[in-house]
Image (tube, rainbow, N blue to C red; front, side, top):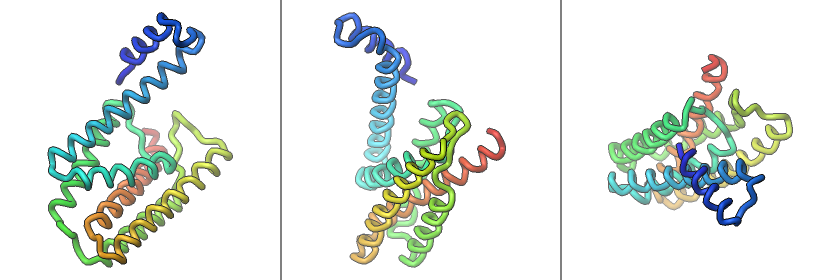
Length: 193
């Protein structure tokens, strides 16, 4: 998505003799990632502000991104499709929070949270055909997934115990979205999509 911008930025730094030309590919990749993540974050904030649910969007992003980063899951065939799916996931979750304010009974949230956690524990990490994982990466990403999941479950339990219902449901939806992404990733891998 930001290939030209990252190449231009890198070329400018090479011309200014700030970086060495032999490191061009590394810098181009790094700048592309910084530009992409920044653009995605700005989009998420814009969605949150537009929908009048900025804090919910921030909490959702803080729950989803770290867990999804280590757990893996579905990968779109292009950066553009990934962007649209990610933005759609945020909009859908914020819409659900708005349609069902303070949601159902807390027991339903606890059930969804435990079911999603079980799916994540059983499936993570989910690799992608473009980035297969070796046994060491599976072990490392699996461990990191469990650590992040335990921290997020602890935050959810804290919110549930102290009746911070709005945040509790955002955490539930963030973890549930990750679990659904893992299921979609496994299905996509099996179907060779």
